[in-house]
Image (cartoon, rainbow, N blue to C red):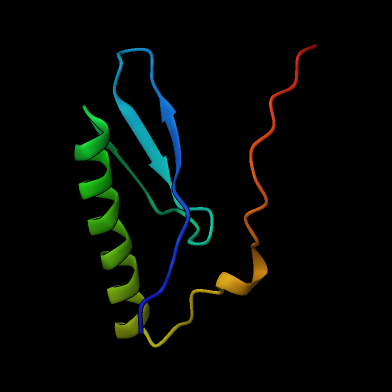
Length: 74
C-alpha cells in the first residue's frame, strides 16, 4: 500500500535545498537542485521505513497532520 508523506523544503545560504518529512522524526535530506533533493528525500524515507520494519516499530504518522505554511511579518 502506498503511503503519502509531506516534504518541507528550505533553501540554504549556498543555494542548496533541504527537505524535512514532518511525519517521520529525524527524516531529512539535501540536494543541490530540487530534483536531486526529491530523489534523496525519497531514499531517506525508504530507509526510515526499512528501519521501521526491521525494528518492528511503527512510525506514528497519525500524530502529525500537515496543515500548511503561513508567512508572518513582524
